Amino acid sequence: MQNITTTLKKLFYLWRRSQVPVKQPIKISRIDNLIIFLVCILISIISSYKLLLISPLNIADVFSWFLTFTEILITSGVLILVSKKENPTISSRQIFLIITLLLAVQVTKLALASTISPLSIIIPPALIISQGMGSITALSWVSIASLIWPDPEIVINNNLFFILIVCASIVSLLGGRIRSRAQLLQVSIFVPIGSFLSQWILIGKDKISLINKQDFFLANGDIFSDSLLLAIAMLFTILFIPIFESIFGLLTKARLLELADKEKPLIRRLSLEAPGTFEHTLLICGLAEEATRMIGGDIDLIKTGALYHDIGKLHAPNWFIENQDGLKNPHDELDDPIKSAEVLQAHVDEGLKFARKNRLPKLIANFIPEHQGTLKMGYFFQKAKEKNLEINEYYFRYKGPIPQSKETAILMLADGCEAALRAMNINASDKEALKTISNIIYSRAKDGQLDDSNLSKGEIFLIKRAFLNVWKRIRHRRIQYPSTKNNTFS
Ligand SMILES: [Fe+2]
Ligand SMILES: [Fe+2]
Image 1 (cartoon, protein in one colour):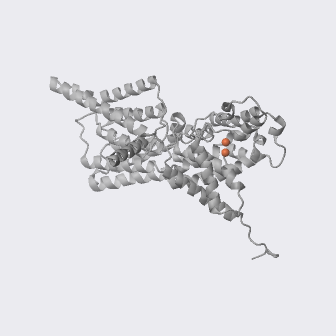
Image 2: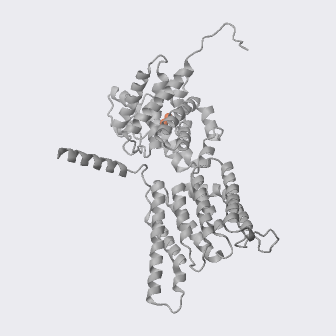
Image 3: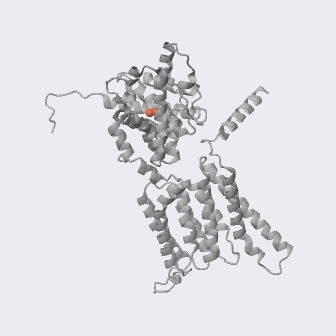
């Protein structure tokens, strides 16, 4: 009996853990929800109203329309749920983009179904969605956009439907992984070529006409013009993706890699005005990247987030020990622990201002407050205690929030371990280094800083091993090679 209770408790614990969201969802306002709902209704009406245009209309027809209408409304809802599941931090603007694209496709189908191939209508939006919201959302969008065909009289060729699904699925899957604009360009060339060849094989060679036609691009059924139109539509989509990124706050892989460029003005400023912070940032990038690789997180996101996490120190670089270079510490002159704590908090507040000014995406800006969480500024808290000041711990804690994702939690742990690992003796053993890492991570976890991050015990173990591996690499680099009198080897 006791065994059963223990097993049930374990199962309940595992179920509860699986229910914890990886990232805290963003709350969507009532007005946004209402607008989204109205657009879904509009999609359902546009996709089903033709069923009511039969005369004479009987109850069975109305019933069949109602079924179709409800089916489309539910599938639109499912699409929103899938996108929320894949992107827990999805904003209302991004949901709006998904359903507006669905609405636009339905309207285009109604207006131009007999003139434009479904390939050119469905594949380009799938590329935008997969780039911005991920492959699963894009695949769901494609399946709904392909199935809700508003006019039942328009029967798509089965082979064309098959090619459409295959091409759109390939674009959706690749779109979520593409890391550069060059790869995007390759997809926009190879997918139309692939669609042309597959249509040529499956639909027929007789459907090609290379002769000048007045309505060359609008000649639905001509597989060459259909494929050319698809290529043009995809190229235009690539041109417009940066605009979608800024309007809808999409964070594509290509955008992440662009932001991670160390020649970006803000990062260049950090390297010139706060060289110590820049060095600290680079080491943290290494620690965080290795740990994220170990647990299977988003490496591009954490690399870019780590690069900008302490950007706020630019407002007063010399107030941070890594930039003092042995010179006077302004905190000693100030001699006021509460004011010093305010300067430390300011590196978060100013960082968020820099993020806003430089239009950093929200997912990157989140690293700025979350890497400090609500950690205690132990050194100044201790100083205040020594001075017997009337102190409230609240003034010596960062304002938070605590890390809301695995990536920001890893960055917090890397931030804590970096200074300790750098300060360690190069002759220290692996065991000592692991002990230092474990102590820092344990103190963060005990303080409740990892509560919202959903990091499991196993993942924390892997993070420790990853940090240790990086430490080993650093130690190896710091071991001096024996010098020779004559250094000319060649
Ligand atoms: Fe910081
Ligand atoms: Fe830092």
